[in-house]
Image (cartoon, rainbow, N blue to C red; front, side, top):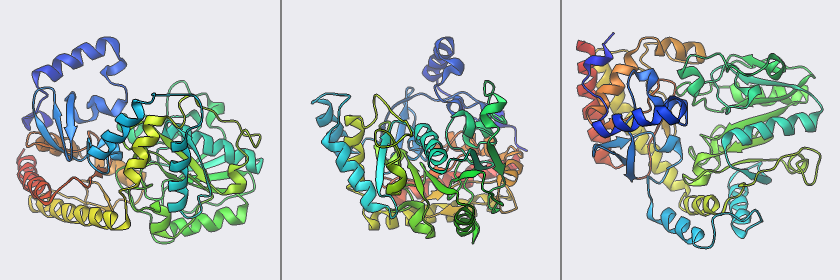
Length: 432
């Protein structure tokens, strides 16, 4: 295994200074754990600005960016139409605590695009959306138990942190301190890509239809269909967590790609255009059980924030079906190039792709579940490759458990430069 210290990247002086200042006033120096770069044995660069496919740090270094605000920036950073929409909305006021026309327009846009999403409730984060989905499922069914899959991350609410992916996996945590046993006593964790046996105590099965928080793990044939059938037989609800896949894989999200319709959806990232916004949607008979119509309570001061709805509408209006096809073609070229570049250096690698998502597993085996993802991460090769790529001006996610995001601003030249950098980086890592 390569020594990460030998790959010749470290943050610039100003980034190091800012991190030192940050750790004095922010726990760990960051406001979301993966950003700390702990799992890649470094400290982070601090971003000053971003445009299109690139970010620039406070030391003036520029990187081709495959984080893209963790998938939110599907048009690329600082898209002019998004900036114009947000500026126009801000000029009228940043928050009202009252209904706006933009909320209605955004809900209409999402519901018209996603088959089976009859109604939508806007919230401010993916965690809020999934937490509310679970509460609604329990309220609608009168049952308590929820089934989730190991390695799938559904936000940081107490009951869904068990065996979570993303930052929980990155930090090697089974869940979180401060979560009482009672909070997870009705959460059942089962292996991804295996259809569980359900009984009449289960309120809902929540799943990432394409798992994207343990690296990218596609559903095996029959898995999602099996979940739909199992839920129908047991009288449980099927919840698709599409915070990542929604309006990222296709206009209709993963449900349209895989041909399986859940009862409830959660959305985030893309639908807010890079401004905090998420949503819960689904069947009308279920959604009408939310307050003020029904007995399932949910509220939020900034829900449907006018800046976020303006940004989201600006993005969704540009996402025609052909734009997703265009983006999928870019990702396919990038993934094929990465696979060839890394394997040619003699490193074991799998580069799974689901339409517009990709990830890197330094493994000779196809990863089908969380155990496989952890085995791939344990080699340490991702850390060395990540740092070697940063040294060549390419930024992937600072964790082997995250996925890569292209934007519509990534051009062929960016893809070619990335592949060339990967070839050099992989050879360097293989020689260490």
